[in-house]
Length: 194
Image 1: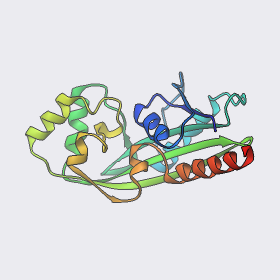
Image 2: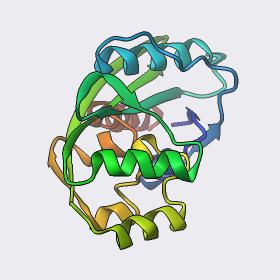
Image 3: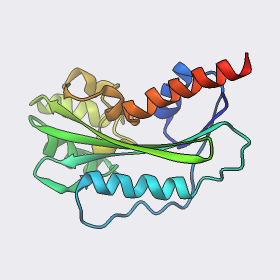
């Protein structure tokens, strides 16, 4: 099964390549990721829909995948902590999350058999009240670069955060429902070709 992953995320690419042998990854350009003030679940759905609209469904692949992940501000379910653009922004986000629980939302859309199927899920993550020395390590490691909320659960932050509820895949960039769907599609493609 040939999969097109329309995402620049190295983590998403690695996740798909762990399970599927034929994954082509391309970065989407020019997709508007700004959102209106609404619940994070609606924001992430809106952004992933725009990404799906930007993907050419020209049938040079069997399946296309787009995804988006947002970290919800623990004090405001209408505010997403985006990807920090500087060390200062990363520090501010990590200080906001330190010692607290927050939700992480992922939306994924899978194009197969002529239609898009969407799923939205959230997970609950608790970050330790780690000391300032750990904050400095996290910032200096640059593990925050390109990561929603300024952290990577599968990276250094994994030592200081726990998944309380939901799927780890949701925090890392895909809904679990979409990964399950891809596994089902893989089985169907294998059966149809044998």
